[in-house]
Image 1 (cartoon, one colour):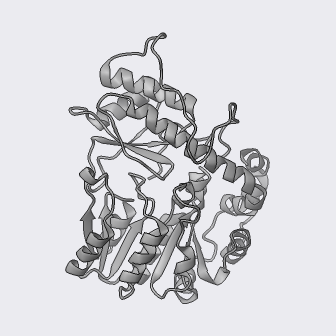
Image 2 (tube, helix red, strand yellow):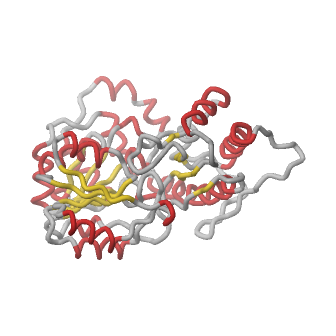
Image 3 (tube, helix red, strand yellow):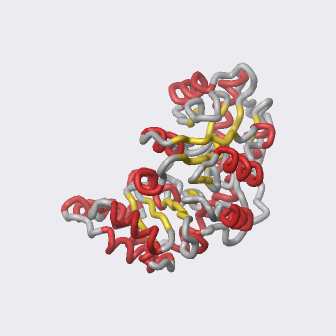
Length: 363
């Protein structure tokens, strides 16, 4: 895909992109969606902005920590944001019954759930989300942010996008840029019933999608098999990376269904200092979570990487955290095949994620 984009660079830059309706029609053909139920944005953040302006009138409930725009955007427009704290001692798992009771106590009119959640990768099964939609059918709006749903391997069909098309108050948010490791193309879309989708779509600028995003959309059908292979490889890499990190003393690794892992640093370790050392001394960039509501500098979010990159990260963490380097004779944790997808003896580089540095930020 990167080679194709590089070869098409002159055409991409020279000509105007198509309008959003044309790009939407192609995306819906590939994904099997009804174009009347889809609105496409210049990144999911643009859609969050318009959802707030158009559909959030007074209050919004959201679990924290989560993606920062779900708290920041409504606060910037003067809405009341009801923050439901996720508990570390419960591995940041969202208790839906407690969340519903919180929403009722606060009188929130809009509810948001990111599934999988960012930064911890916590996942709620499809049946749980459907239960939540039923419980909150009287709200003005329920948003399920599925920006990382393609990385889920806990069940076969995790998305509730089909539910959004037939319910009066549900929007499901999706991201293509995150899925393909192409964050720079700024491409997201949402799914809702035709009336709700039209409300969002009609407010968007006519040419809000750039030519890079359009090119990727029209290439999707050619890379479907490669994309599925990459997702299977990522599930194996995620399990191997979690095991390697968990072997480090006093480092806590949280189970994830995203393309990232949340880790808690040992007592007394400052995440900002560690982040800076990893960058300046080892050329590795990690996401320190101190600026996320409901989190602290004790937490880092790390993008899942293949085993060779994880070895490099683990060695750097040993040096920075414990002042030790692994002995050449010291046995290192070896990758294990995941239960869902055995890893072949030899693998090509990640088609989707090969361009990302270790721990590349996903916001």
